Length: 116
Image 1 (cartoon, one colour):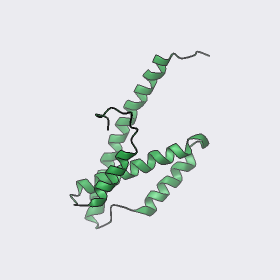
Image 2 (tube, helix red, strand yellow):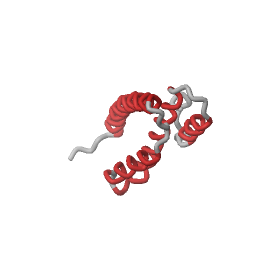
Image 3 (cartoon, rainbow, N blue to C red):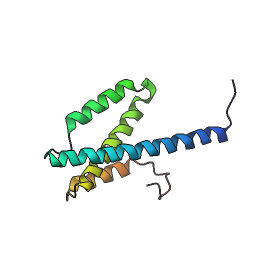
Image 4 (cartoon, helix red, strand yellow):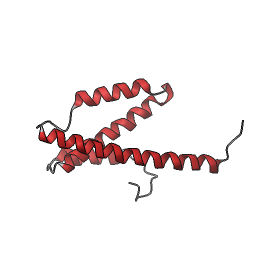
């Protein structure tokens, strides 16, 4: 079995990050479409039952050692999606700011300021 050098491992992480970014943008665009549907149908942006269901199914698929991390990741994604839907619907809402600020607070402080 070949032992990878740290540079190769970092190159793998870089590729994975590019894929994650592409998927994140696709997810957010889909969330925006869902937000439009919610607005057209006079549905609230926040739908706790759907969010709980999503977190339940995600946690079922997560490996035992990564369950907590997976839950944090998807909770953050849900907060960001909700905030984006609210922003796009032009609602003046303190919950938008609260959700966005909450998501930012969870960002690792070591990230460069451009990444935050």
